[in-house]
Image (cartoon, rainbow, N blue to C red; front, top):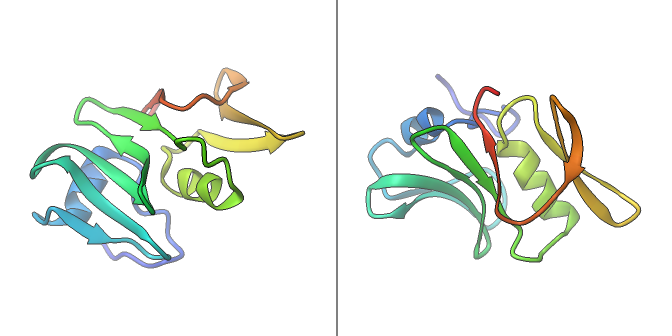
Length: 117
């Protein structure tokens, strides 16, 4: 698998683990963005933008989304870059929403989605 800045190449735990290739953390394309194991070299893997883990993948397929209150265009873009296929975050009238196969729901920090669902 080749990785380029234009590809959406990580949206599951398995893809994140493969990209890390045994390292604790690895830079991602873009400014101030890394992929890292949250604890040690096993367990959850997160996309960190500055000091916020915006997308966290777990081995059981749960993906947690978080902004830590930084609801910026750039934070939303990083979430959308790495969120599993079928989901995306968008904004209407200053409110954030998550689109999923069931429709749109209010976005909340710490909300979880499932890989492949």
